[in-house]
View 1 (cartoon, rainbow, N blue to C red):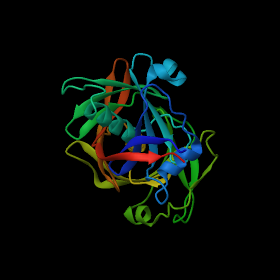
View 2 (view 1 turned 180 degrees about the vertical axis):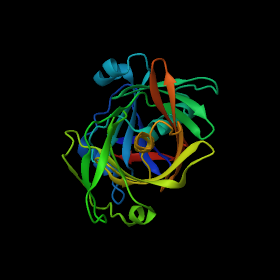
View 3 (view 1 turned 90 degrees about the horizontal axis):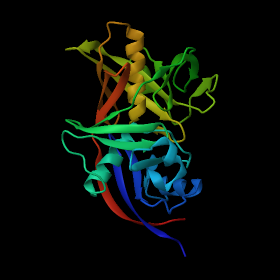
View 4 (view 1 turned 135 degrees about the vertical axis):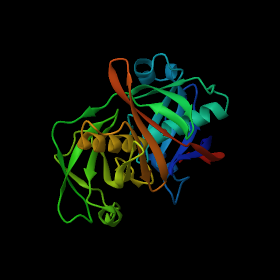
Length: 290
């Protein structure tokens, strides 16, 4: 007889998730079960699954999240595991605080374990802000071919806990004309794959000290999504890198699902990138696992 589990549907700027509470780590969801839950015709429909589990209850949490009670077990829509999800972790925080599993005061912070280490969240005017930590700019460009672009374009590798390749386009016509129903090709292909962001600058790029860009994204293991939190951070960091030393530390990034904020601030001896945006819980229900 199929097992029935409770779930909650949530999203951050249209990047949507099935949230499943499993505090004691009793569920062992297969890739196929994840894929069925995320299927938009035969399942609930989502870009991924967020399993809410105590760090002590799973092996990954013991090493990657010591010191954080809760671990975000994020799975892509195809069932594959992902290191981090910037929109997902805000939805995760919303779920923890609204269900009473955790408390986050206005002036407080909430550590959450991920496969990319502990990420700290605070409340923000947009909803929640997460410190994604430091980032890495890859030394070599990746050539990206996408349907809708006449010629391949160079992409900049940015790692913010998970891998991204950011491609600058000439204008909104190119951005709107992309066909991301087909996975773009990367040469060379990163060993672990990567999310691919396509960006265009706002005109003017900087307004009142804040940079602005538009972005679309093809997510590894998912396809095109309305938003990608870590991708938004990577896109802002890439444009900031290209713009040079005078580039601002604060950015707004418009994606099909809404607008997110990115800012760079020094924490100790190194710069960190922080992402802010809304997180919404839509409805709850029960589903029979395939």
